Length: 414
Image (tube, rainbow, N blue to C red):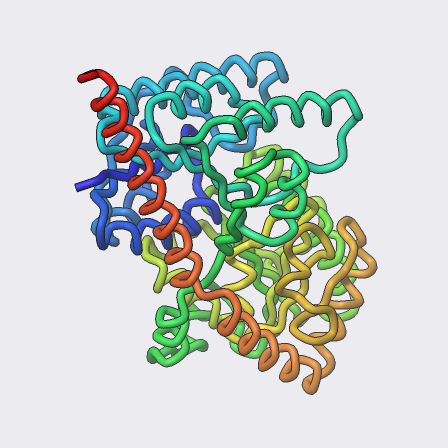
């Protein structure tokens, strides 16, 4: 049986892994699937794979390298990244390239040599989640060169997790890769959403276990507690709101708790019990437990600065939470302002506080955003559709690789 190896070289986890999980579930129906990830990976991530019955292997790295590095000088962080990328390539080589398809979390902008090395040996897929942003002309030309080089390899293929990213990367890739760039949306699993909405749930008890009053109005955020998710914008907006409405609480669910320095800064906002940071692993290690927890909330907020199309936002909307996010990258593909949710500009704490108060005070608005958001996401962002597109591309790549192998064998005989 043809094998697909999914691999990444950082230890934290988030939407990219949830996206991959949807592809894996569909791919393993006809492929042998293996996930390669580094030692030191988040235990909750490993538990999630185990709960889904997905086979994985850990490979050793010299450094436990998170996706987001904030305390390492730029040159040092680059050296760590190269070292860990090399460790991942060694692990792939050990498993072998025969009858293998690779889906790796690398991009030509920073990993050109690794992708070339892989594409010379097996079909390689990557997924682009958000555009590379605004850069200098020289940086753009360098990227254009790197993406153009990768576009020459028949073994190289790319997906995009949203239309915004697809438009951006079609300007960087060339010829076949640009033309064939398929959108495999970061999506939700509708049967899982239906199961969560219909499952027995006592919100009062769940809130009581977390120390949240049953009469409180709760805004929920789910994701890494990092700058690009707009954490300080949210806390500033929460400070503004709670000065007049102390019955509004904010809960942020994150894979890992912040540093002591960040804890000090959180405390400086004076929110007290009005802001709670909860570790996702303490809520549950399966998707149903996390999704079930969404139901404690009255609204959802994600004020990101950089984002593709966040799955947590899609899940919140599908579950009927009136949602607020930022007018960036792929988010407006799901959050249609005033129709399926509310959009603000990134970094605008005053604008965010106004949007939060609108959702809090206007029941009709909440109901409209809840109903429209759920219907829109459930109909447009079905992970089974995205996974079917991906698996069809895997099939095509496997057939082409087999045809090339047969041609080479025939030429050798001649």
